[in-house]
Length: 313
Figure 1 (cartoon, rainbow, N blue to C red):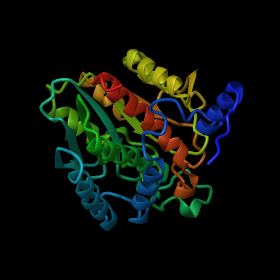
Figure 2 (cartoon, one colour):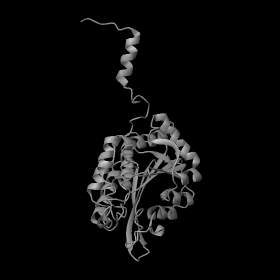
Figure 3 (tube, one colour):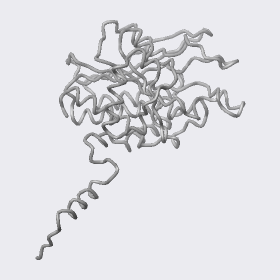
């Protein structure tokens, strides 16, 4: 057997090539199983629109709960009802999963799992009463958190991590004008806030529409006003991981979302959201608009924050 001796400059070049030039060597980058997250978007949409009261809604709830019970330390379904402005009674359920439930230091990660009962922004007027598929608007955030649960089950966090999947976030609509009715939206977050008056995690992060290909997450204005230090923590982690193309240093629009309700309850929470999504509230919000790379970037940022807070990096 013969051996070949390479000069040191060539060895350096070969080493760089082996690790790649796309940032794969950055610690923490690629920690989340992005392909799994992408498949979990597809799985949710396959149930059909997760509109409260539908068979798809019930089936998705059972599946999500079972998925988390195989991974988290504790999982609870929290049912509640809401009477709408039109007098309809909605039967809704939040899902509350916890890792290291005895830990005093905790963070909250949340997304809504229901999908909207109408597609009022559809270009075709006849499609505006169709329920939303909800691939990005709902399923993407849930998929990241479920894939995150896989990683936390494999390597338990050193701090407490709570996953809250809220129901009834996207219900509010007027069947005649499709005007938003704020009192019939953000229902799961409102219920959680009203029943957890003493809950004080270090901070919370809401994921909403986090899966679009080439997404750009600007710094949402309510997040900057209510929890600027959390915004800074998240965007710095994204920059460290090389995800500046997703998490851009730019102020975006103010969005009335679950994080506003949580902040009103004393839980300092920000919203990671790509609000420049052309398929928002249309029947075209389907899995083909979602990219595993985007889901993975968001999940990697969350994992870096969790590991760093626990002294695991």
